Image 1: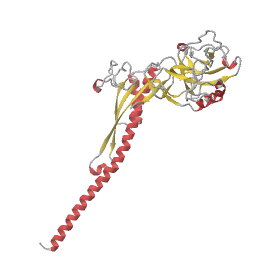
Image 2 (image 1 turned 135 degrees about the horizontal axis):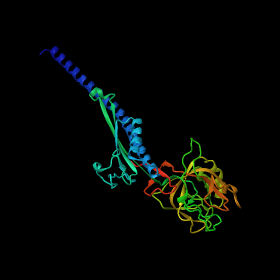
Image 3 (image 1 turned 45 degrees about the vertical axis):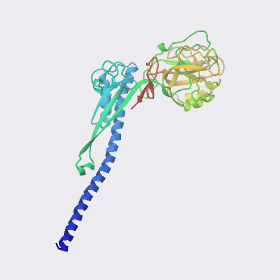
Image 4 (image 1 turned 180 degrees about the horizontal axis):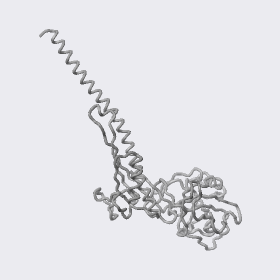
Length: 371
């Protein structure tokens, strides 16, 4: 064989190897770029699944609050959010407050086939959450180079609703039965008689319903109805303006009172700066009687959602601002009260940790993404 023939063969082999290397390199770059594209779509799909699960749980939260809601309402809410978040398809299963699947009869199950589906026509007993599964089919951007036209991103999420057990709480406490400030035995209007107001006619309007004056009194043991939520006494105004983020495993729970006798006076400006906002106020059971004046604790059983109007305080004597007008502004109790907070009890749903307890009275409701 001549040198010329050998040289040409070697040259041809180099060209083939180079071509194969180029194909491999282009394929590798395409895979890397497509991987970034797939990751972006995966995150988008996960966010969409989260939103769909939250939408279903929000309808169940409304149901817990007393509204009439059906399986079709859950489906409609989830459909709307799924479409707005570009899911190709989704499905859902009902869960309890802990995120466990439920059968149509309300029993927990580990079998996906036995779990009650969203869209099956029935909301199972005890349903407080939704497990959503979402798919998004997307066109390949660079994968076509190596023969892939489209991919599917999949994700799932669980959102549950229930009694709110955490958040930025107000450093005041409302008793389920508010003892008259003169301590004459009047238990006032008990929690079962607190009417829940409806949203205002337009954004920014006060709620439609009964406005109450809630007295902030001293108990017979001398403990003022102010809580120490952050462990630092006598900083009540700061706790209103910058509420500590609390989370309790569940209720009931003991919370210390604040020892500062001048807390109400400190808080007035900070509270009134939040007028027109919904605040979350812990509720204690019974008459909120405590074991002592200083170093007292309150037995908190749940949290109320309260649309704040105003707070008023004066050092001594009867405070006219805590008297009400007997019609649109009614004191729950409090003859002789020198400090009070006025506003409306509302059924309010917020994002926050939830517990397994029932929704009672003016109890606030939370929605929590647990997966």
